[in-house]
Length: 151
Figure 1 (spheres, rainbow, N blue to C red):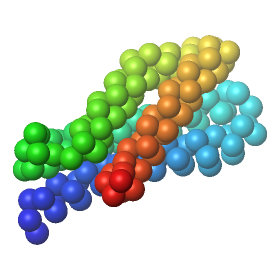
Figure 2 (figure 1 turned 180 degrees about the vertical axis):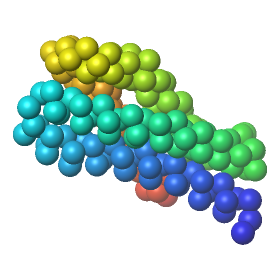
Figure 3 (figure 1 turned 60 degrees about the vertical axis):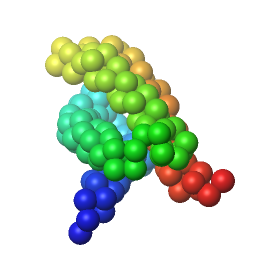
């Protein structure tokens, strides 16, 4: 296996975990969890997001590290415009995720611990809105990586 193939595998693995996890949470877990009472729903989200968000940090490391390695291999100046756009989206998504981690995610954990369910619901809604933006950006990046290269 060449270094390029290794980096591409690491890159795709990170994208699959991050974007796939957002798809699962948004379109499958969220609708199912809405049937639960707020205390159970927020406790479930706290447990799920604790595991998912930890894996997102790993995915970010894989995506950014392998993306830079592949750009170095090609050369930044010689890279296709789509590669630069993907890199921009990756940094933007990372910044949004960091804003979730240090903002509403921390607030959700405190609210669940204090059994402040209304505060937890506010924090969860803020997480949902930012994840929705990241899901859009992640999907757009996949489109750029595939269809966008042929335009």
